[in-house]
Image 1 (tube, rainbow, N blue to C red):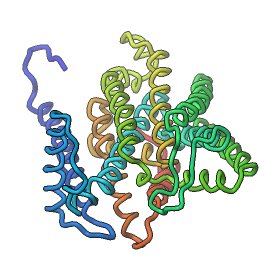
Image 2 (cartoon, rainbow, N blue to C red):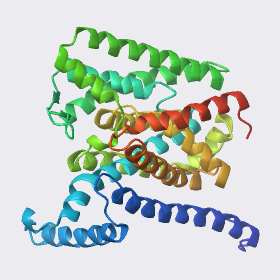
Image 3 (spheres, rainbow, N blue to C red):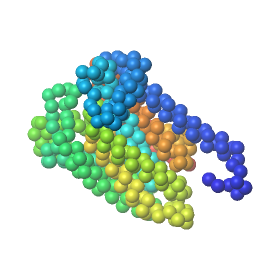
Amino acid sequence: MHFADGVIPKDYLGYVRHKYLWILGGIILLFILLVVSISVGAAGVPPYDVFLSIVGGTIDRISALLYSTAIPAEELSSTDRIVWNIRLPQALAAIVAGIGLSVAGVAMQSILRNPLGSPFTLGISNAGAFGAAVSVILLGTGQMHSTVADAFTLNNPYLTTIVAFIFCLIATAVILLISRVRGASPEVMVLAGVAISSLFTAGTMFLQYFADDTQLAAVVFWTFGDVSRAGWQELGLMALVVAGATLYFVANRWNYNAIDAGDETAKGLGVNVEAVRNIGMVVAALVSAVIVSFLGVIGFVGLVCPHMVRRLIGDDQRFLIPGSCVMGGILLLASDTVARIIVAPYVLPVAVLTAFLGAPTFIYLLLRGYRR
């Protein structure tokens, strides 16, 4: 931001400081919530012990990596085993998935100029679910186990992600085609998303009808969106894709601000609107495909979080994108924590709680309309 006299007004500094402080506070809250989430469960672990395990374990693993040595399993305490082998991967997966879904949602809402845009409402998540079902049933990439803790795994997660990504791209292409229709309103886009979602849901049901018992059980179990099925390997791939996509969206924050003002205004400012829109949708589809292929369908996070952040810090993409990332991590991690304790000793899939939270919000947005 440049000013004619070179002096930054105090009001503007206060305006920006408020947004930075809000994002910083959200990051601190997210870390506190991470410790609390790891501490609760069937075997309770005091938050202070969780903090020491995370800090100490991180230092030990960095040292082991630098000196190419492995940490013997017998040297791990029971607390370290619970934290590092079970709860930390699940909590981090919730944060990464929340960030990915939220950043994809905020990008779609800006790119399409549609306040109801998100991977779930526009049918992209269901398209990815259909692709993953094709991979599990027709290509044999899924496998059921007899243990409850690890009932389903992907034999070839990369192939599953590729197939899911292909079908996400198909749904994305349909959405971009509809967005080119002159005067297409947000309501039309949402109805198109409902149609796309229904189409791919029907395709998934068709595959399930012809699947054998093991394949059917694998697909049904997989469709329950749940972050607990992600291990360190899946977490690493998700984190890599989500980090790259987030950096891309942050790098294009000024382009999205220009598009928010209208396509003609953005073109007048030198923005290649078509390229920004197409590439952004492809990147959002990739993020959705990776998350869906590993965790299943988790709805409404990408819709709810950007609107929550808009209410707090406004529409400026410089702050809206990172703020939505923080809010997405907080929302999904909090939902996963509640899902583990609300009907203990049973553990609900996190998608159940996000649906309960997202559905009323979605109806509210439809009834209220959107006023900038």
